[in-house]
Image 1: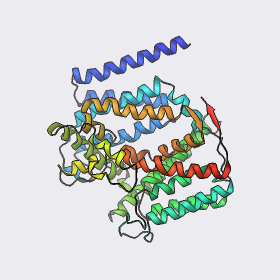
Image 2: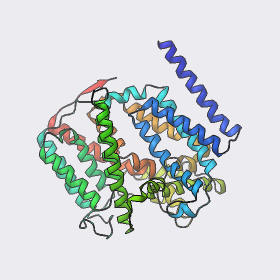
Image 3: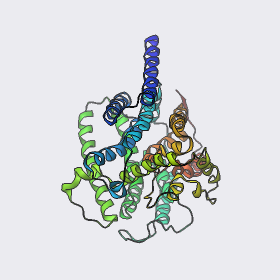
Image 4: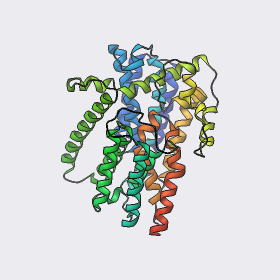
Length: 416
């Protein structure tokens, strides 16, 4: 059994290497690349199912779905709709990313490790710590968005310096996720914080939180008799969430929203279209400019101390200095591409996945919270860049975990 498994993994790696090499040795047209990408995506989803890998695959390729719709119909949201898109090159680099996800999800034991952390039940915060976290969540969200609900003022003018107050609120909620049903004040805090986010037209954090809760819930219910009913419920909930998020997006832009345009809106979604445009100009950038050769990664070291500003090194700001009307956003492949070109796309995303692979090597409270945070912020780092999770990873989670240890004095490690 072990021999057969090793052979199948070796075959998977060989096929993946051949596919990556073939797209550059024997350039394919749009249809060929679409077909191969689709096959790899489907194979990845079949093998990984409920996994952060499947989320990475769906969310990143959803951006390309918007580009495909534009390529076929000529319709797209915003600046993407008036741009010349190099769809073939976008698909080539996406194939490398998709194959990387397939290999990690199918050839390694990533998914098996992830099952342990998704179903982890060794974390039980007490009432006192839960009350502290709820207080932090409420205070942080008010600091982040101090204006009255449904106002059209400056949504990002926080009461105190810093741009990670929303993550402080989200992480505090994650620390009490297991106590939503037990303590009414935790449930009330969730309702208030989510309502405050949405009433200030901030959708990404709430959507990420919803995805994290849904992923954990599905993982814990796999194999139960009522699984089909759960799937139907989840599908209905997803449709409702998409409708609400779309409505809020249009309301934020003070645009009209017609429920009859739901399908079209799904295929020309505002943020995904902007991110697709940023990906397209990142490709154009490396054609006409020198590679950054790691320059943009320096800002992560600069911004370890929150008061330091390394924003001038962000790929988005670098692109804004070259192209006009940059809408913002930074696709997951932009930074690797702009720094090291093809080799960046091959190596850097795999380093990210390797770090996640090592994170889930053990299961304990700290790793569980970090994993939940990476589930919750999946839209942030795939569509806006890794910088959006730095403060949460380096400062907020360790601070709240230290408080948890001090109050509860609990520790539990499980080797996988």
